[in-house]
Length: 349
Image 1: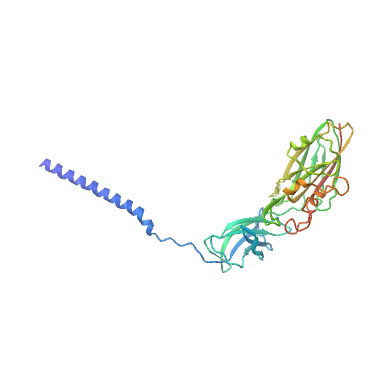
Image 2: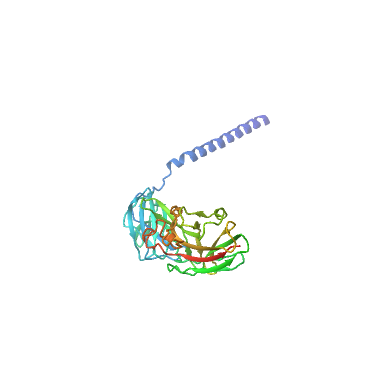
């Protein structure tokens, strides 16, 4: 009797295991097969207008009365829409676009802001904006252009020569320094202290051949003689122009973007250069000229400044390197805008 009960128990256990195994198999098959029958909402393919919001990078305030251009990023020679305007910060196209379409979007408000460009894909979700169905492309931030920049040049003895906020007036500051050694290193600083503004933002720009580049700020240093040791300057990241005015040396370097996002946060950038007058007799005079301008094509820099008056033309860097004509900078930027200048006369050791 006990043996029979044990046999029945064994059979029941085997049956239970088999049942559990079958359930596991059924669940596994269901997990693999059921997704094939799930209903997924199709992506929208309905053409509709697109729109983008323009806002100030630092304040987050919406930008009104700007403009937006649209183009195919693979062919900038054929704009899709130009100068889309708005009385609000939301700029809506008149044309219709389908989800997945790649769009090159150019936002700008001149002369207050630097232009900006983004490439985006039209989303699949349609939004309702002012009772209209629109594909929202997101938000583009624009950097407000300070318009001017100051500069200060600190000599080894701590004396400082400072430029003025001069815009396009080009009135240079003058200073003097008597060297106490053959080699003197100077600190060149460009501060930008206007709240919620920028200087030298790498502004996207489309050239006449429809290629996109960035226009940047450039700083230059020029010397009234060509007998100082050039390698001391180039080793500090400065690059010489190919054909400087006769008897002079001129060097350039990209001036990094300078931002002052909020009150009490002063943006600035500093570089240095060394004047080594070893080849020169003591008591000689070297005039150093410093200047800067934004919205420059970096590839034009090696071609140098013009030699209009037989000496360093310290504003010619904005006009003598192939970017002088108004309109070649983008929209509305004159070639002479945004310069700061310093003149320093050094008496050599």
